[in-house]
Amino acid sequence: MPHLLPEKPQVNTTNDQNALMKCVAYQGGVSLGDVALDDISEVLQQPDTFIWLGLREPDGELIGKIQLEFGLHDLAVEDARSAHQRPKIEGYGDSLFLVLHTASLADDGIDFGETHVFVGNRFLVTLRHGASTRHTRVRARCEALPQHLAKGPGFALYAIMDFIVDNYLPVLDGLQSRFDALESAIFAHKPSRQTLENLYQLKRELLQMQGAIVPVIDMCHVLMHIDDIDIPSDVRLYFRDVADHAKRIDRAIDAMREMLISAMQVHLTFETVRQNEVVKRLAGWGAILAIPTMVFSWYGMNFRYMPELEWPYSYPLVVGGVAVAALALYWRLRRAGWL
Image (cartoon, rainbow, N blue to C red; front, top):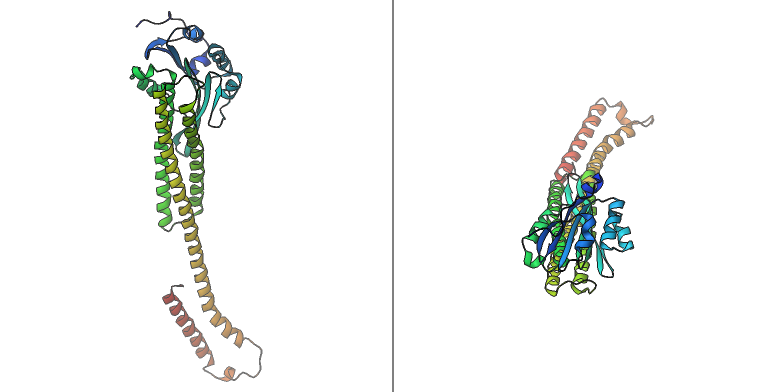
């Protein structure tokens, strides 16, 4: 199928070229080719056509240009300029603005990012910030299903949300592997401050993940019943599938958090047991040392009349008696497990 419009050069600035990932027009679920930013408003006037635009960390000037072309609401654009938004869905007349948090594994934990989505009856615009995976596979998947893509931006929105939710699974697997390693260290009787710090770090990351995934469930419920934009009824069912995946991930996070709390309690219990063992050993050696201390302090008193002082065998008998008593107490404490 020929291009909808003659080819025109895209935005000339280097920043816009780096931020603009893909801008494609679709008609009847079939790609009509790339569209220049300046031609967007013209293409939107074509019947049964919608535009899917993907951006990566655009600057303020480019966002302003996108706002003019798509007629986006000022409040939604203001939120999109900032990469520190909570997950949410907001309606602005005949368009919606969504904020989805993304996650990816890193060497020292999890890198979180954001994907902002503008969706209307004739367009879908995504703005990615921070750690987020390109939507190339999502677009290819949708283009391979033209009968579904023909239903409009609603199906493309489902594909993006499903892609983001599915990407939480390898992150959760990575956290599970870290937890298994920490758990093994705990039950290997090697509790340490670093292990406890790692457990707290893992707990914080689980809370962050839960804070990102739970709002997706509410978003899907809104999209299944919203009337602000035209989403076919058969497409709304797909959001129920995304909500189901999100609920399963949320339950898995809850289960891991409970195991994590139990592991922290076990860690603290082992640490308490270890400290008790140290106290028992100190108490045992203290009891052993108490015998010579008592005897020698007794004979160190300045009494003139002590009959043992005149006896020639008093010294070896006292020393031997102290040694025997100390050894007997050591043997008894050793059998009791105190030493």
